[in-house]
Image (cartoon, rainbow, N blue to C red; front, top):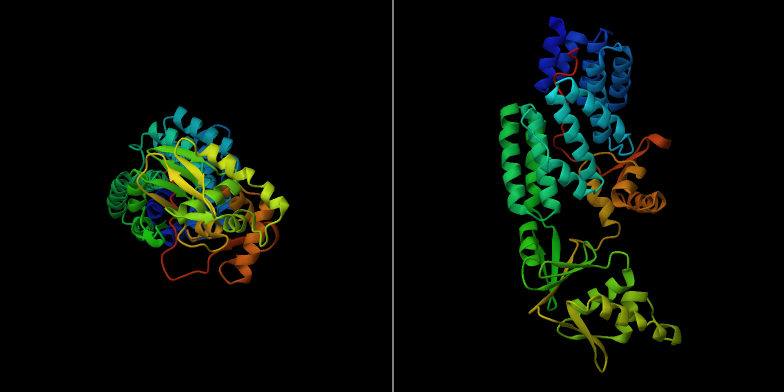
Length: 405
């Protein structure tokens, strides 16, 4: 590796993409192409970056398997940053195996971290957690170690383990400070804000209160019976009853929990569960749904008939609460994903939400019409994002040692 490529690689490692291009912008040899691709990615031109990295991968000879694997890792990271979640994960696994086999532990670790990050984005927490438990971050450079700690914090936040998340974010902050990359430090700071921002509403005994993540963790660890409208489950004493695939039963459970310790009239239950304005014989036949809910919740609560309707009766819990999203705004889950500031495709949103692409497209059309999201590009390159606000861009963390043959 010649001196200009070495200097350019060091500039990229410190986040100086323009400085790196000063040394290699006019070169077309494979190492320079790879570094130019990384530089363009850090400057935000992801399409050009992918083209350069693919050219570099094709230009490396058959004996340069490590260099080609590093290009594959860099391209996988660009796919993640551009929220192209349909890229072939097997290619990244193959690159990881090649790097580990040839002793490039730093980039092998980075490839494994990208796999974890991909699983986290599409909501496969169990798989991500298994990988991260067996993951050794010690070979990672300082900047990538900060990103790894962000992934640890991301899993902990989704598992409502706030103390673990705070510790991981503190380690990420130290690593970002050592790396001296401003955009990385800003990303860590933004992630830390999640722990101190409203995450849900508590509805209990007719009152509504805003909760942070640590408040939610404490609530779910208490002896209260919690109807969780964020995940559509009922929680009590560490046990979880899922009603995610039974929306009518969940609507009934939420209505009964919000009214506790009082009851809910039959007409009100019909309005909540079936959106019916008038009671007729067909609706009376649907009282069977109350029986199904009674059976589903039998371990945690009973449902008693009253003169006006029905009332929830906890078995052992002293209190009943509803945990609701911070807002009842339509398409809140889509907005939550777009809140990261990145440009998402509709297919990536559908994959992350576990919904059909048509359902996501309808939500995006509504949000666009209301000015809450904006579209960029056309056709298959079309992406959606929330309107930009002043601030730092998300950092692109790519292995500095990419061009080494």
